[in-house]
Image 1 (tube, one colour):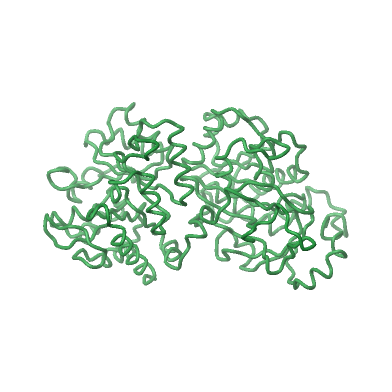
Image 2: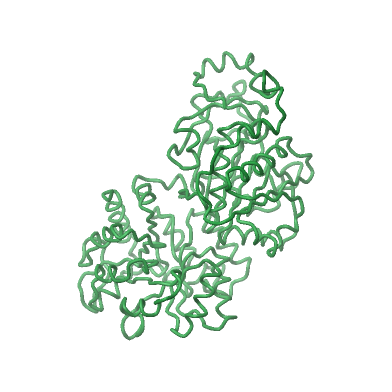
Length: 568
């Protein structure tokens, strides 16, 4: 890999002389005597970054429409096949048949690699819906280079499926020479996907796309980008349509789309990319990320603060519970969550979606209405982690409908108060759909079986770890239950938590900013850390001063951030 440090002046002075050798390194020296396969084999990483939790299967889609294809696609197919086999990280299946995206076919795979695809790959609405649901429910998707114009009408890159652009993270294929020499800075040097670069920027020669909307650091975790302080972008002193007014030229990023993991990198035009040892290690890490074996932070770059980074290290996710803003629509709650700088929230079954969709956020919504919710969340840079539905039915058909809704919306944990006799069916679907069910507590009258931790433990005894507790600290304290003692009772059966601090320990106690009441909030957070409990979400549920609570909620966020920074 071309990682030697040189100055911008040296680069500008030597570009012409260097162009030939750097453009086609495979044609010079001893390397010319090696076959492409031998060069790829020699560069394959020795081992995976993470041990697969189960056998993984990667679908490589190698298809173009209206375009002849990149010469590197074949090399990439070979590199990924050999890389998966040698490291034991995954098995590959290469296909050009759109039918592979039918739900019954797609479910055999853990992730899809769109390999340099250009053009409108398929127009069947059912296949597109299948792909979106696969990703949003927790599947993986990665793309390289030309994939930024996949599902556009080519030539011209006329948009035909905007949501694919959202999933992959950007659109556009404007570029300069296919041997352009740029300096690259690591925007997130400590990110696991950047480990192959050893914390240092580098220079490289390739064809670099300048992407545009929907690209945004409010949506994506940018891994590396063009170092504009070192790279000459003037092109003779003129700006062209490929330039960005903000000078933000991201080249690789990762994100979550719902529960799904997606990744994109533009460095893939030339075959030699796929016999570069460092780039292959980078792509191996990316594959293991989208397949689900290499955990990586994905909170959008623009939302990162020292406190958010501390929470990433702790494995903590602070988000707004929709009940906090249930006097508003869901779309307004999403906007308020983003305004608070939070990347997560929970959903609520009896909250209206928006003025344009005056329906509850529930199982009755159409696929198009769910799409609008997905896109609203994406625009705000907010992920939906939990969902409150008071009762999950015990009959198979009714239970399946709830879990299908959860799958489509990327829900990690349902919060519910189901009838005890429904738990056998619920447990079966929780395991099948990989979605937790956290039993919520109200008071003794509202939740006669579940109001105290012992009741939840009794209901979950001998059952899957996907069943556990959603601790509502406010109801605990009003009932005279000490949250610290309850936490030690539940231990790892605590799946998610609705945080409260109260002005007094009585049935009339109401919410106050965290750390100002009687709830021992910092002690509770520290005990969570000591016990190693990482809930789906620390849900900020502020149930007081409903219409004007934003300043008080902001104080809760500030308190949580402060505690996060203190815990080591």
